[in-house]
Length: 417
Ligand code: ADP
Image (cartoon, rainbow, N blue to C red; front, top):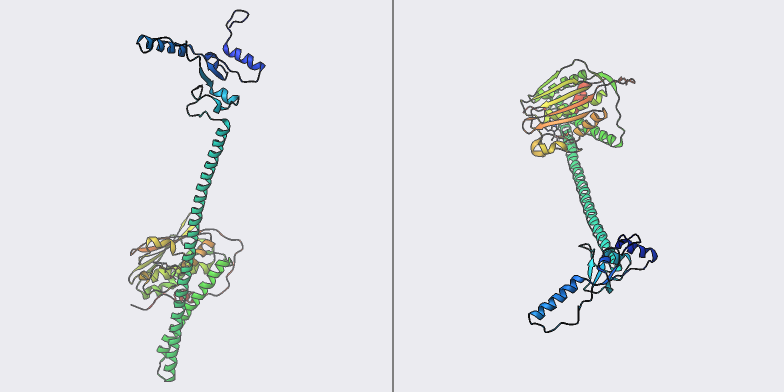
């Protein structure tokens, strides 16, 4: 086809011109138009016809056939443009089976649009159901693992509580039994006039020590409850912490000496003034010392050391006793926790001392570390911030430091062995 100026008209332009006039689908019987935006149709393809005629002639020449049939049998082949079929919403079921489909992407199917949409929806539905099932499965698994963990934790707490009650009953019963039996025997002796002062003093000392053990236990229980209620308060005073620790160590020497344990105090500084609750810090040091004495064998040694690093004070209590197994180290600060009986042997305790120690250190804004190796020893290290308070609490009470030590050391076995 030619334009007025004799130039060749492009097939695409022809198709577009027709499309400008009508919205109907355009069919063709010309092979070349199928590639230029028309639907297609029965297309006469010279190549096909030529090959048909050639085959006929070869048949005749080879004697398979006697004469020519009526000229080219295939007047054309069905050819359709895949994109145009969908553009004009042609029903694909009506397209003859042996049609040639042009422009069809490799993995696409020649199916009616409605079926394609249905397949797509079913596919999306299946994917959604799949995702939902996987999500539900994971959520259920997480839930059951969490429930299991909660259950395990509850079980563990319950066990700790039961252990605590058993332990506490034992802790209460032992000193009570000693007090009862000692007072009974003493009463008998007095009634029979069979006593002297030395005997009486010895028995009274036993009653005293065991009463202190009971008092310490009750004090600890009250403190634990106070921590739980958040009503445990510090009475901060700007004090020389070196002196406070040194005094308490010196006052404990008798208890270590009873077990032939060397108790050494050492410091890098003579004075470190910082805000502390004196009574509470004394309890912390005494608790660590009483544990060190309890868990160090005869002939061992305990080393208490203070140093200052920048604006922090480091206090360490180190012994060369039985040590704590690695897997138990994180547990010892837990309330009521005690390392297994085989290591503790005859030593007494409720398993709440270190819990209180940690709470007091935390209240002071500090932290406590523990390093230990079985049969080598244990080192507790307390790190407290150094600062002073303006509103300085003045402790006017007259303190009997020996009585305080006696109370905190009441569960240390001081019998020579
Ligand atoms: P307890 O009153 O039983 O001593 P604590 O809370 O003070 O309770 O200590 C918890 C446990 O930690 C102890 O029962 C003991 O097994 C272990 N422990 C604490 N200090 C030491 C130490 N210096 N050496 C070895 N074990 C220790």
